[in-house]
Length: 396
Image 1 (tube, rainbow, N blue to C red):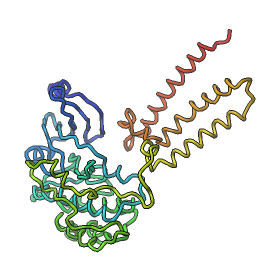
Image 2 (cartoon, rainbow, N blue to C red):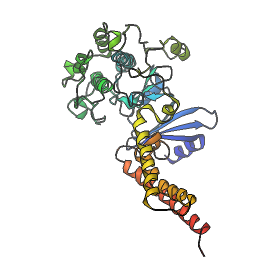
Image 3 (cartoon, helix red, strand yellow):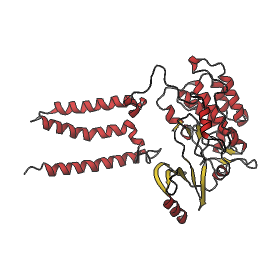
Image 4 (cartoon, rainbow, N blue to C red):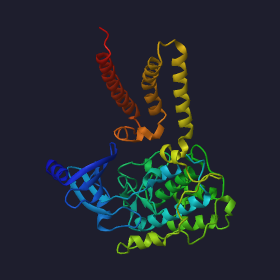
């Protein structure tokens, strides 16, 4: 593995680290020879489906450029797909339009159909693993947990998945198959519509029957294929009015069964402009300039931040008399430096916790480590400033 690591280090420049956990490390890299930007995944397993994804490209999934397997690990170089995750698209919204969720479900069914026909089961469909490109096309990513269906097995040999989206059979009750992914689609639709996992709250609306069928415990009682699920979604939303989320045209969702030889630009040009664009909350126009920086959903954080700053200044100015205006300004700046960075971090103003270097640490189970690192950096800077101030303004 050392020779392979040296080769990859010499050839690829790491631009960013997207995620790192016990299952895989995902990085954005640039080929030093060609300048190609790609995603490099180091999966801590040898039995992955990436060889099948390399040999046959499936529309709606990133193209696998290269693949290395050594010492029980798999290193994958795959296409970088620009866009936002479905989780980010839905972030801060009370709910998405029902028709919008229906389009997304149908598009994911189009992606899953050829995968399931090839015997591939994703096993980890969730909002974080679906990308929405700027042109609206959906991409299913992160196949680290995926497996090849084997009719000779009674259950999976490795249990992987995300709680809330994983079907019961993923915990060892039976072997996972196409119906496992349909269960996850039901949980995904429920989360998009009401912001809750099915175990917390079930959506009540035009898609309620479809979601309930996807989430049945017995796989035999669910939809048996992605084609069947897509038909049920289209039927459920066929008469949807504009007030309920927009008319759902049966042909609005482009098929993902597109051959590798087709020009992707032509496919993107054929997409309807409103096919996958998240609907804005009712009564809101385009985001203002400050909203594009802080995020529409962070408006309350901005208000809290400014209120806290005003309180600090007021408390400092009224707590004691000052000999001069300059002394008051310096005292206020000291208070602001002590308190406001912490408020900005813990309120996640401007999504500071999701920016390097804290993004690599701000994962489930490691937020405390990110907080400690932030506190250490702030403390070092504070000590340096204190030392500089003491040196410059030392009283003889």
